[in-house]
Length: 347
Length: 283
Image (cartoon, rainbow over all chains, first blue to last red; front, side, top):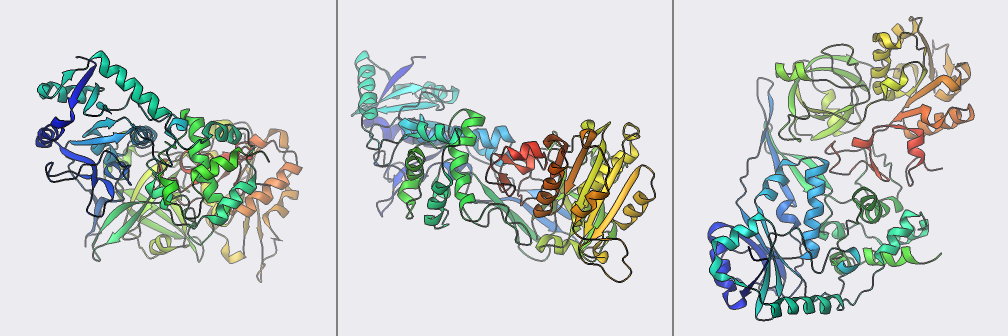
């Protein structure tokens, strides 16, 4: 198998049309409001694929939906109380145009849902996923994946990895599912020339120099590790956090959840899992009202410590992937870049 | 049971065979899995907890109050504190609930062998310690351990596990003391917080281990007293209660600095807790 291939942009629609025959497609699409979101691409010809703007969401919600039914439960007259797992079958799905930050985030979710414990719902969807990644060629205003080492060009984790070379994509074959696709539709691909490979490297260098944010992630990690971040930092951030949870929902690596019962009648109901957020003040509240986490500072401390300290200690790298989405969404100015700046300042 | 489970969130049906009314707020539910095979395979260790499902109320973590040394027994002692526990109190023998587990790091039973053991509990906090105490009294390897039990309740009518306390008070291996915050007519024993009982204890801190469970404030107060009596941090062991949704380290509701109480605990030594920051045990 040739390691690097060329796919002409003129052939992209036809290629996606072929893929759509065997797979569901999820890709960044621009809706009629002008918003770009990862969404299901049903009709390749009429949908507005948008590989220029940063998708507002990540692909988190496709692997770990905002809300999903885990079980249906039934209470019978003969004192029965039975849980039936919801057997949603997942179709093979290609996630197309996923940028390196979001691929890194998915690899982190794999650690959470497949290594800490095996979450059967996540596993079912993940096993059916095929990733066609897109190396970034234009960092957005709040991007800092260069500092979290999760982009802009990721060399692992995808089945196929694309680099935009203007009128064509350079295609690198990653895992077996990518090879399968190239084998099945070989006429879309030509071997890459040396010139293409040189151009890819040039794009990489230009991208690397294109970050407008200089975020000192490593310095924050170091200061957290040395316990040098003063409590006043948590206090200041907590005062300005509006408890909206927006950062945790939009974050591609935030996976806290809650599980609740939703009765449908006196004898049956659904057990539902939904996204939750450690920044919510009620997240740790126990029956009777006692909350073991410090009012104010404890919640926001947990969020940043988890991303930049605990995960570094347990997995060797932060679980912030530098996508910058929380910066865009936070109206209190308590996003992770602000934290990293404050943590880095000498007291 | 854990390894073979296909879906970690799936609760199994268990039937309530007996309900023991410990006091006006605490009931002990004796449970058995309806599936015979499951019931036979089921095992646990003192200090572990179960995720309990009550119809329409979701799930909550409940520590096991029985001892694995008593075969076929699974006791959950529950104080009516919220929606799920309140609904649990409405159930009667023959009713069914959902159970999955056991979860959590248990008490280090092997490390307790050969030590004098002091148990300090407040209210429902005696539940997980009862599992350890019953195990110590049932297993030959603990035959030479002296057990001291200090139990504090709000009032004499709030004393739970009275049958156990009676048997411990009559057991030569056990030294069992009670106290209440507020006396009632007929109470001629200690009045005051549970730490006031520590003066009655003559154990040698160098060869003793203390196991503590109760409200956070009580745990802190007891540990403070034990430190002034020269107990080593690693010989002070407690078990914590937290809000939890999964029990296996995913939902993160039970975070406590870098630990998750569900899988790193709920049993911790004071030496371990001292390494954490931003917890309720901060100085």
